[in-house]
Length: 209
Image (tube, one colour):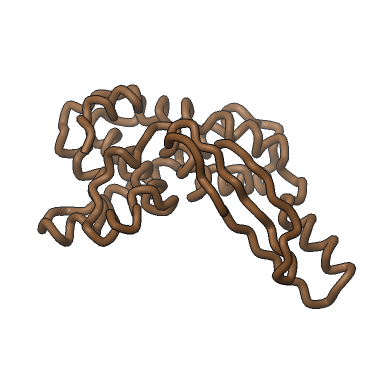
């Protein structure tokens, strides 16, 4: 396990109460094995704080968006995929406490576990020093995602477009998206993904977070 001071440098925030940070990085699998508190309650609080901060940011900075559009933008930003990207950029996987079973399965790299840890850290930061530092952390890490989502709001996502085009050709359409390879360190990882159409590979591409 890496020194947590390195993690604090990554997130640009130094905790006064180090126990809060340690708790935020403790997955249920580790907590169960060591009879400790997990980060689940912090995750619950962090989720609510995250939604509030992004809602406030949208209201104050994207006044031209309608209520329904703001809801869609917020949903696309406050989601597992978006938070996983934040966790990867900040190197969360090097600092998570996970149990033996999750360690074997590289659970510390699972998107859901990493995304949940981001929410837990947000809550821990809030409890440690209040809302101002939390808002800075959230906006610094998600403002670009908000910008992209706001520009694309109202547009159909690529999965929907592909689904509709293929359904014009056949009644039975099964589309499957998979990550088939990962290369490089966590902070600069390249993924290879593929899409299958009724069992046949339709396309393969590489991309970075």
